[in-house]
Image 1 (cartoon, rainbow, N blue to C red):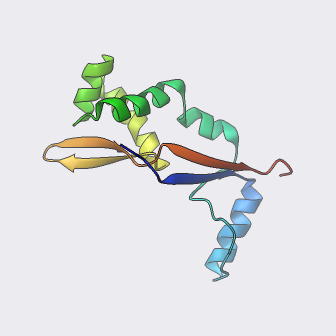
Image 2: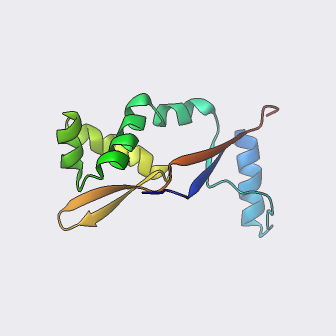
Length: 121
């Protein structure tokens, strides 16, 4: 399965984020390559893209599980821990959970992240 959507993320200072937010609120159209996800520091992103979470992404890609329970069986881990990890990946747009009856099926939305870091901020 091809996951062609690329996520645009950036690491920017809180001041830059605030300035952009205020400009948008004032109706100023910012014409640059607006990232979907903003982080104020790289450590926040690193806390989400842990080796364990990267393994979950790979398992979802390779096994296409129908539920969180399926993932738990594959990796022999508590379903609650898996749910907590997946929620972080859902929040940044890498994974989506689609309800199928009483189960939530994890699906990969994007397997590529384009990251911009301004080294002068």
